[in-house]
Image 1 (cartoon, rainbow, N blue to C red):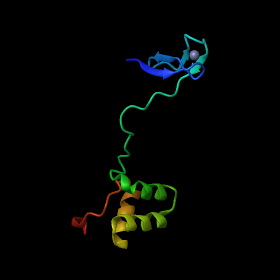
Image 2 (image 1 turned 135 degrees about the vertical axis):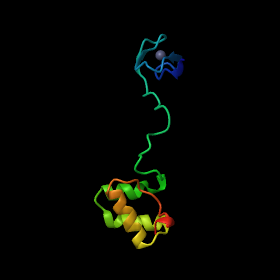
Image 3 (image 1 turned 180 degrees about the vertical axis):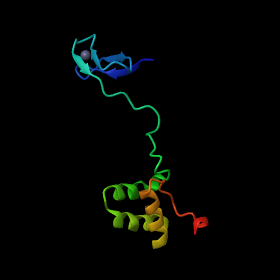
Length: 105
Ligand SMILES: [Zn+2]
């Protein structure tokens, strides 16, 4: 499969293989460094953050901002302070960060 690319020097339409990193324009002979190939597939999900809306909470916690993480968790989920603390405690213990599961309480 070939991708198309326009030479930045002479605007000639060029084709290249996605595995190519550098291309020589066959028209003006200039050397073109190709843009990085697109990353295939969705970004790798963090198994500890199955709910993407909580990723900021995890980021704060991992930055050592446990209080802020707890506050943000409550803002996002509407959890009680106790629920938030339990969720953060579980995350700290290596469990996935989840929204409060009312069945647990
Ligand atoms: Zn060219």
